[in-house]
Length: 287
Image (cartoon, rainbow, N blue to C red; front, side, top):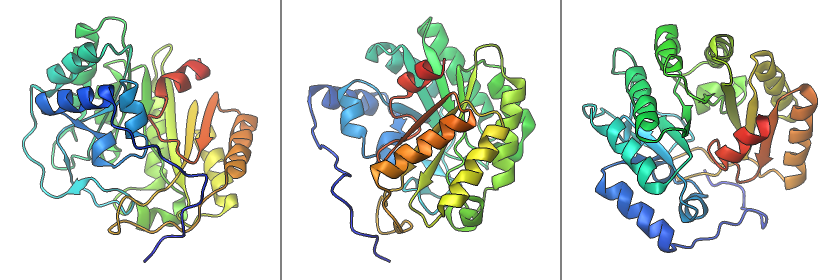
């Protein structure tokens, strides 16, 4: 199914500059994966040119088949136990003071990859004292034990994306659950250490109504989420769901105003906003 025509206000500047090429080579040499590449993020050139990126651990193959995502689906390979150390070294080599780590879903693992997340957080801190760490975690199939393993490693920001409205979950996130997502975020908020922030994000343009967006905002605020991101869904390829609507920048501004009025500590809302886009600035604004 073809998507709606892309409007003029969604423009991405493609420029492979010196820093972009350096970061690309570093990721290749250390055999790392980034969600920037795997999810075909439209901000990759801007972010990599500024020396920032989001590391994707636990391999490049996901055990789920979400309708919006271009990450490879199938049977994952074994877990690389050296990966946390390699990520920590990459953070050091890039000179980062703020690192973002995410992963594919690993429903094939007993702990769903939670210990690997915790090891990566601790390795980054050991090699890079003072570096803030944000983790964008999967739902761990609802496991409270897995969530606690990550929280015990004391991330600065615990992020889990809601992605869409409840009505569209069967199509957009067929193996996830809206209530399970809210429960995870509420548990994280209840167990947070002093200074930790919780975060979630949604995509718009998949066929949701404005009223449904407002209800999601209310639900996330009730789950004590601190930071909200709202971005335009952009179809990575013809294999993913089509874009039903492109939201105007004024509509994103309206959503942000509503979120701040409800009581979120910070809301980043715009056509090219993604969870880790300007993540450091989002956290600073919330604090």
